[in-house]
Image 1 (tube, helix red, strand yellow):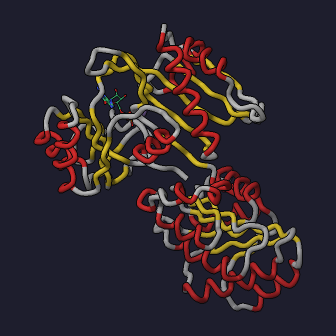
Image 2 (cartoon, rainbow, N blue to C red):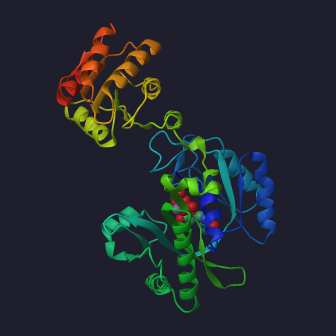
Image 3 (tube, rainbow, N blue to C red):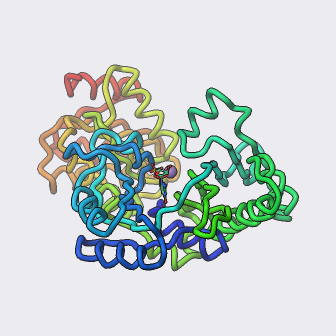
Length: 401
Ligand code: GDP
Ligand code: MN
């Protein structure tokens, strides 16, 4: 699960990480009082930030033509006028895809005077099965580009999860950012706070880009997280009631939400051939083989190892709601899965939905004879595939590419 920037910063602040004074606004009426409150607090400017589950907002463009999902306003009037251009509008960034995302929340924050921008992230390293903390002096930039062009500018520390992040490791990273004097200790403290957030909230990733060296009103310098992105590990969410409440269904694809209600693992894609498969590995292989024979998958769908008739019916209804779908490929290898359960589910779903599209079914494994018999006796017009390749070729042909 992903959360918004303002929610990520709320979590970070609980672990002592410095963030700006901020007020999230869900409607235009809330913007002026929020801006006035921030300005009254001593800030000379206020930042208006679009809250969507995607990065690259600063350089993004609204479908209306308005440039930039992050804007700095000099006064409350200007903040309101930016808010009018953002709220309810669709923002397209490098990470949203061409469809963009509708902005339904704005974050108003005291604008910091930035002297330097850094990058900081806590990730899980699959190679060592350990958390790593990563910093770079190249903040505010696309980190993938930094990794590709100047990998020496990324510095990493691997953490032993049994002992946690050691203070010396945090100081080493703070020094790698070029911090001097008191700022090394302050940087180390902030990095430890970010690590603690990652560890205690069971995150898959925490990314702060930019982490900033800012100049305060008294002329002194300090460090502050000006952006925050947190992805949570769904398997550990049950331990965090407060974080579960941060879920924003507006940011999730409606069909994916529907699928999650039936414990179906569904991800919508752009192609025309819907697939219904048991097992994530087989589902990926099915998408590959569709592509191999010249087709394009409309979705990833893993119904799991022990799907019921109800789940199969729900799965059918979900894939059929995608208007791009021109044909369906069911690819089942019954290990735990009883092929006849799938067959019964298919028959029920086809009758219930009045399916008119070509449907290719490949069944193999546990109780396959009964499954094939159910399909044969159903009176439905469906195409059977003898092997995965055969079924994929048949569905590609039926869809006419
Ligand atoms: P992103 O584009 O989605 O990553 O959004 P960010 O929150 O990182 O904002 C984009 C850029 O806006 C940052 O890299 C900063 O340069 C700038 N920015 C964000 N907050 C502030 C602020 O408080 N003061 C100033 N001066 N710039 C800011
Ligand atoms: Mn950012």
